[in-house]
Image (tube, rainbow, N blue to C red; front, side):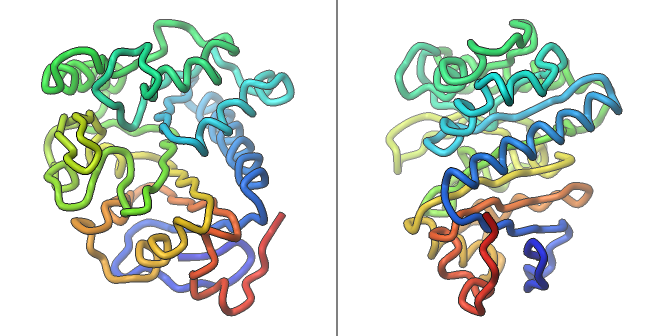
Length: 268
């Protein structure tokens, strides 16, 4: 693992390059995330003519999407070349207040010239197993030339319990090795979810975790500096062997990291 501008400790047996980028405030994290997304899009479009993105749900991505929808940012990305997927979805209708699709549509997609055919939502209103199977078919149609998907960028968050996407502690999705998308009932939130699986997440060229707030600090230290226990801390399963992982966090979320206690410089 490395930190921006400083030497850091490396997660045991981690095949991926892991960067921890600490910013002073949540707003600074969001601005940095927007810049990273726009840069990744430009590189992908120049190389392959498209930018295939997996979006995340949650409060922090909401702020990111709202920023990307503003003219200074929106105009810097060729939205007609963007293929938008989701890392996970709640099994709810697309107009439900808790739908990840609805949140992204209202904050971002309705405000940029993305092509409707390039928006690949999970059909959360369908029976969960059917929704997961249909989503996998959608993925396979987009990534028809490869054995596994290779997203240009996957946006992820992390829950206080160490879950990411809808890979939850103690459940089976974190160990899925063959399917691209699965449905699982998550008792902790009393809801069915559809999620991308670890092999799909680990096929990405770039994974960007975004986490803010002191409530994430203890878990973030366990994920980045503790033993590898992905059944307990599913965020640890995201270790792409041919990709880059960046944790973009604010000072509050980084408060318990060893490097932070050593006086690691917090960037702005």
